[in-house]
Length: 294
Figure 1: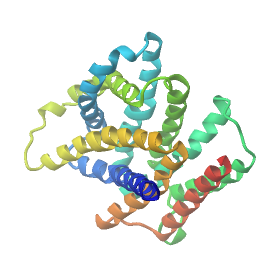
Figure 2 (figure 1 turned 90 degrees about the horizontal axis):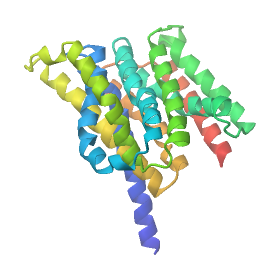
Figure 3 (figure 1 turned 30 degrees about the vertical axis):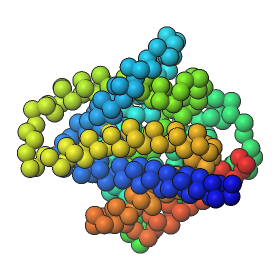
Figure 4 (figure 1 turned 180 degrees about the vertical axis):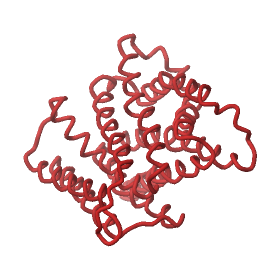
């Protein structure tokens, strides 16, 4: 029995590491995709690639979706996938992939704040300290530059807006779609926004771009974003929650920025000591919030 439990714990740990690598690599893939395509095209390609992946799953499970659940599926798709994909691509034109990954860590704090303000989520006084620490870290990341100099990049607000939308999405799924199997809801979500992504690709001239040596790797990076970051990542995350708990699964939040910073470092991006410090402050805030839930 003991060996089985050890193996199970190790398996979950490895799954969390894999998910961290997948989601942490999304930011560098956005950067590489933008070499050959516009921000709108990269965001739409990511969503459409994931949509194609989920078509067979949706076809098998489509009858499990009630008529009143289609609207929440659309809103979940827009707030949790379509709009953030476009926003991260817009930000990626002006931010390092490492900084985008650091700012993404603000998602769980936004989820908590939105839950308390709009979804009657239970508030624990100790969480206030975590929120304040997280806000300090986030603001610090927004304005930190070389040698702790203030260097505000307005484009970082696109990432902050994306994390706000992620927070909204988490509560839409929890309150409106919790009765659906994760694979059913996820495939349904992408079926709702896939046509939007296809429309953006069509109107943006994506299909007229030649697949030559200049565009091949950006194309593969964009498809990889969809298949890995949006499709496989979501399936793995839902499976980890099924194996353990949402709190344990959320530990991936601490590892994603580390992976993103690692990719940025290897890609030659400028990463300042002040950014690392404020990222640690932000993660400390998340830790305090999660600890207060237990």
